[in-house]
Every structure is written in C-alpha cells, then in structure tokens.
Length: 182
Image (cartoon, rainbow, N blue to C red; front, side, top):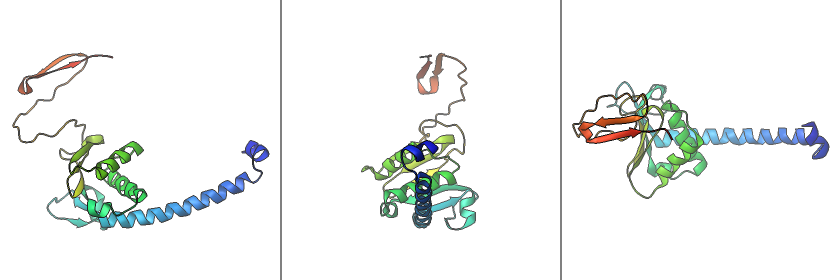
C-alpha cells in the first residue's frame, strides 16, 4: 500500500475505506432483498414429514429441509443478482457449499426454454426442473451417488468396488466398464 500511495494516489487508503463502506451498504441491501425474495419464492418440505408443507420463514422448516421448491413464475420476476442469492441460499440450506460455477449452472437450468432438466451436485443433491418449479432434494439421502436414479426398471445393482484399472462386468445391465489410467 505504501507503494500505491507514493506512486499512484496519496489518498489510496481513504479511497479504499470509502469503497469498502459503499460495498458493505450495498451488500446489506442485497441481502435484505434476497431474503425477502427467498421467502416469497421458496417452499420447504421439512425432513421429519414430507407430507406437510411449511412456510420457509419458520425456523423449523429451514433447520434441515428434505426438499426445497422454487416457484419459477416468482423467481423470474427478480433481477439476476437476487436470483443468484436465492439459489445460493437453497444450496446452503441443503448443506451443499455453492460454488460460483454451480450457481451459474443453476441459473442456466432456471432460464432454459425447455421445461425439464436436472443437475447433480455434491453428496447426492439433485436439482430438478420442471415446467413450474425447481426442486432441490436428496432422493436417496446424502451420499456419493452418481448417474440417473432408477425409474422403476426393477434392476438392482450390487455395490461394486473398483480398486484399480481393469474391466468390470455388470450382467444385469448387459454392460462392461473399462477403467484405464490416462
């Protein structure tokens, strides 16, 4: 900072303090607006009873929700900065640390023209879009799950340990997985 003060702007410290104060005020405003938008657009299904819906403004509903639902009709009314905050808060409440790329992917999912789509996030969290809403849920509970969920095919696969490169058969699917080092 002494170098910047000497060669660029002698008042650099005061300029940075003023800028920080402005940014803090704007952050507080966005947080307040984001919280109000979240309360309006998101519905929580509590973990203890999926059948009963709660208003997201109640502490019980948000302690550990089983599912969060975003109304796309309401969500699309907000500016992009508020939409990001809604999505970020959903991730945090579902115990998934949001990354900026994930938030951008979630925004793309919300804004796409087609009525369907999904994203797979950390620990088995699925974000599923249909015509009217986006749902955040753990359909198999929290865990390291990959791929699409079974849709009633009746095929049960045993857990397969893949300790090293090689060929692994899955007869129930009539498939073979080949793992190689690159």
